[in-house]
Image (tube, rainbow, N blue to C red; front, side, top):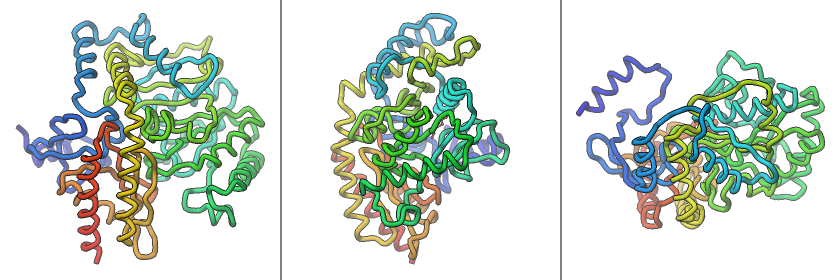
Length: 437
Ligand code: PLP
């Protein structure tokens, strides 16, 4: 067995230097079981980041493993040039569950970036415009087009894609600065947001915009919820001119947010397209666009395909995963255990000036680590991550100031596991506080 030190040395020699690894002493995960994982040195952890919000059903789930194994023994790949039964079944299931009404089509790809690329492609084809609205603080992927519209400069390259992006949305912490007197749940707030967006479209775009793309809860941005009334206000304005709404559900789908199956449902609006990946395959490389048929079909007359899109292996696994999520009502568990964990985190935060805010819903929860004047404290987030690791819990990091701790375990976690993690978080916070003195 190669030691982590040796593996790191070889990793550095052959992988790009900008690939970031967690922890001063990075680890290799060797195997997992449910919501637990083990590193290559035999240490056990509660996996409270789920491979970046991805292993939604957990590790080594027999139903999913068996579906993949069985399919691998038959045929792993043939391509979209041939019929694939599981692909059709998965598309039918996604349409049945989708928050969009009317005729729909599904296009399968291999990742979230590719799903967003495809949705943007369909929208720009359909609307004959390459102008897009995106949200400040957003993240939509690592491909050229998606990086070009991502609303965080740290994730954007200096070379830009052909899409022309304008940013909407008051950042989370500036409701008061941008909207003066409004609290975010003030009914007048939605109206103020709508007026602002109307003004933005009139003054900062040609007026003929293809689509707005938004995550219902910003993932990489640090689990920041877009207020439902804001989303409603935005949709009203888009409907005035036919601008399409793309809900990037790469992190928020399949019950992750607890209250609903899709993140966008909290607002009650109906998007034109949703994009999926991560939890769709529970770790298999699969993504999808589910959208109104007339929009997805706007590629008619052009040739377009994704070699791996919806292939035998990924659709067999994703179908088994989706059935597992539904059969075990994981959304309900996310709501219940997530609610309990959030209460614990809120209580913990009351005792500590290091946590500026606890936010999120379901099993998509974040701690905002701050300094004495409320400024982002990325060093505290790093220390907290390390202290959690030492106590057997893996969590993630994120946020525009790189100061958010992200907690997103598989939706199968039990209350006991949440309790155990909460105790580790309390200790980790105390240690982090000590180090800051
Ligand atoms: N959209 C959102 C909301 C994401 O969080 C991510 C990845 O973190 C992506 C898109 C890109 O997905 P992928 O990394 O699978 O390309």
